Image (tube, rainbow, N blue to C red; front, side):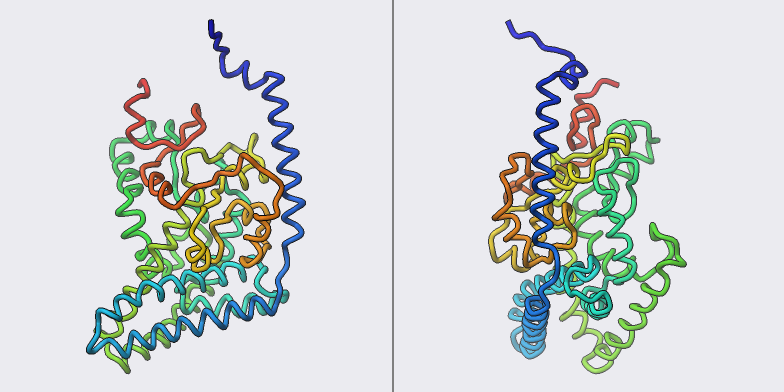
Length: 355
């Protein structure tokens, strides 16, 4: 006969405590291992930056040359060009973590220059993203640098229109297909309505807006608005869709790990609350190894080009949340955090819950 014990008894059982102690020990081992890979290698960073930038310029040049007579080739090249913008964004991301160059000054300089191509204000994004790293997986500190995610209880407590609004926000077409380009091209242009105080981000956002106006305004003048938009908008849209999807799947998966402040743990949240997105090598290259997101959250100052090596030589950690490329698309349906089951669920799950 199978005897089932209440969850609270199992939680406090000796076996549960042993597992917890074992996990904490493995997390500490992994944290020590990650420290060996922090710090920039200037030569590698410069090679990454220059080679990627040259490939990007070359792809844009060919797109312009092919525009009049071979627009199909122009459209075809929007895929690698968009991927190269994602890669440039990862370099900007590393600059924000002060891990791309040894000098803070050069990290900030290059980060601001790269914002011209990513259309993402460097100073604002750096502040919000660092807050995200400090609080990722903490249910008590949501709202900055993350995707809005309600618990089942919070969703059920909302009004009818509040639920409708959340369902619209979490609709994959709206959140990713529309929301990605909307955030990149338009919403990031305004210091108002952001989760950080206007006085702290005004200079970063408006400074980039001025730079975008000068550079892209000149392009509009010399090659014409129609040609510029047909050339560049598809590229930035693809980069936005890919970047948005990567950001989504890094934390929005079924067996992620979230807790309120009193139970939240940085190392545990980094490894259990962040995915190891197991991508083909070419996609790891375009995405700057950000698929090793568990290690990036464990130690944010590891440069992108050392994450794969860190992962390959890391001590065994069976709890790592590995997600294959094709299975990752199942995550689209996940919308709510069930505190009782400790997992992300979809709206259909609400039908199984008693009122």
